[in-house]
Amino acid sequence: MKIEQIYTGCLAQGAYYIESNGEAVVIDPLRETTPYMERAAASGAKIKYVFETHFHADFVSGHIDLAKETGAQIVYGPTGMKLGFDAIVATDGQEFKVGNVTFKLLHTPGHTMESSCYLLTDENGKQTAIFTGDTLFIGDVGRPDLAQKVVADLTQDMLAGYLFDSLRNKIMPLNDDLIVYPAHGAGSACGKNMSKETYDTLGNQKANNYALRANMTKDEFIKEVITGLMPPPAYFPKNVMMNIEGYDSIEDVLTRGTHALTPEGFEAAANETGALILDTRKPQEFAKGFIPNSINIGIDGGFAPWVGTLIPDIKQELLIVAEVGREMEIVTRLARVGYDHAIGYIEGGFDAWKNAGKEVDSIQTVSVEEFAAAEVADPSIHILDVRKNSEYQSEHIQNALNAPLDYINESMLKVDKNKTYYVHCAGGYRSMIFASILKARGYDNLIDVDGGFKAIKESNKFKVTDYVCPSTLL
Image 1 (tube, rainbow, N blue to C red):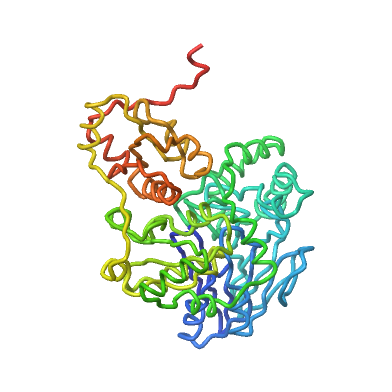
Image 2: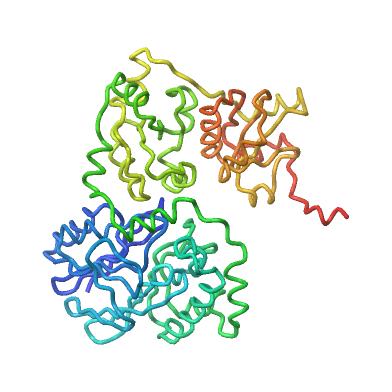
């Protein structure tokens, strides 16, 4: 038997390939199917099943394309949703034989109503692993507020109650030496306190996971699980529906998105379609020069989640500006979160645009030293801190205004077009996104601080203050 975790850092997502005696299963695959098919081909195995732990919200699964290409059967836990594809809707406790091993589906509603785990029994009849999806993470459990975005009569308290019962009745009675393989790790928006570790023993989780305390009441569980949840990204419900109803073939999406355009063709497409120009280069490169009205979301940061957060229409047509050679990667990563409507990229990248004599825009960037000198010259300068509110509350430059990128439309209302602002985040990635979006909307007086708050703090040139709750001032 072979178990392989296929972890994708940008989504903090774990898919799994399990093989035994010439047969294999894939659990919670990403959109692109080639990696799984290559693994099976390398050992001459046939993919028999695609097991889904639930209808994913943070990414579009590859279950449909993988089943079409391999003949595998898709398996979900009990669900009342009408699926747009052929699948086995299994019952609680149903078993699936794969080579010499057996998988048992455990229905564990709570994160979503169809959420299920897959308990693996090896060739010797020993229960060895459990694939828990978003029911149980390392250090956390799945957030219980997502399914209510799709099913109106559910509430997060109801779902949290179901999750409490699922964990106590289905998971915690299992053996301590079971290996827990979850669908996500630290950085995913599907939980709030996940460990950077991507697997662990169930015994360790019983001892250390706050949500598995043996003496916890249901009311205590519900309160602790829902406390501190941030609103999920807006694209989550749309990904859920794509996973339920179906989607375009990944090959069609990649072919459409990797259509090479000359500068003239790119300009014509931008003018004729209303497509959004998405520049995926590094923030520092973008600042030096970019196509007017484009926005910067760098491929080397939290690319897919920020696309999903900041581009509200999942069907928005996109034109891509990329580092030469990375176009396929970008279109693939867009497709992972359901943005299937890239319509092409500029061949030769931004340099081709500039060399063609086309109009170019830029964003002023200053070093921390230049920023400090500006503050000395005018202590009343306007500073925008676009980090999350929790980061700002932890510590920030005295007199800086918090305008979180997460809530760009609300944050924009704090900005006066007629005033000049120095903008920073933690390291420079988010501040350039913020500045580019506002620049595209006609805000021309934003200056990006290179290196962000990390460089600001290390310089010792600014007064940094902890957040003070207003109630402590009474």
